[in-house]
Image 1 (cartoon, one colour):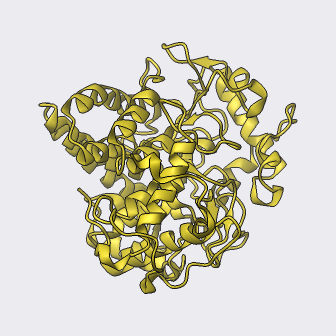
Image 2 (cartoon, helix red, strand yellow; image 1 turned 45 degrees about the horizontal axis):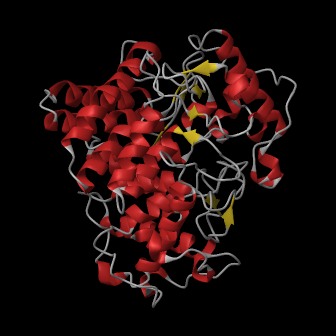
Length: 462
């Protein structure tokens, strides 16, 4: 099991923060899966569910197993795991683009989207197993995880090497990243025929622009019209997606071994993915991994936190890892404790706009995983910043990287889930909300912050 980043006695306020996180996950639970947000995201999202499972494993491994198995119940015959699984009870107009736009269904009959998201699911399945070993669960999910990876190799490899491509910014999970501005500039911005639902819940200056949304919609519609087989205007090798693909192969090797399957092919695949990342996406001069436009061979001028995520790869050479850590400190300001999604020094940095500067719990957690065995002091700094932001602003969708102020929607599931994991349950479970840990500085009390909320009882932990 992953080691906690500090001794439990260093965080005397962890118990109440943990209970608050569980309250969010309980409130967003739909019976077999967790919505990212009751207001903004009322369906099941692919990599959200993986992160949620990691957090749920800390207090309810059964619920974590159900989360993943429900998601993979919507897997397509070709192995792809769609990025949205639609809840038939939610009205079509509650989210755009919805069921009618995608016009796609899994073999189970459930309506889905037709694109994918980063393959973090094998990592999540292994973490769930570590929390409460269950070989039957691994035997059920291993074939589905393996099929997911076979789909990526068969349908998404862009060349003879092992890197896979994304065909839409939404597949990156970081859809509004400045790294996509160049590739998107060539995409015609189709007229919006539907009203944007997101702006009813979050201020426009915290969300993508109308122009970007028109391009996202045009790309998705074009891909849909090919039967979800051919990229039309966007074909990118993304460092985050590929790093998680490699790390997931390592997790698959561990799962395979428990299931009595030879783990060697997965380990070999992980090595090949790491080698391909180094050969094709490592930029020695910039000290970071960059995306690559497969159509033009060009690398986006903008760097992002996605380029730091390969730290999670166990086979990454030490000199490259050290260089990445230096970049995280010098250009992203990691020593402040909050990891922005875009370098603050870069043109176009916006600290409160979706993926153009704010700090997110999931990318911070992925970098934290890469730091644990490489720089324990920086790992503690990053974990402390994550906890401080959640305790001060609540489990928001994203956070101002300098002040910790919350942005986006409230009660966001993966923010709550990953804080549970950072707190290292069960080692910290006995600590109450009696004190603010000096090592974390003063938790800033904001209206609606978790230190002010006592709206759900502790019976949810029973």
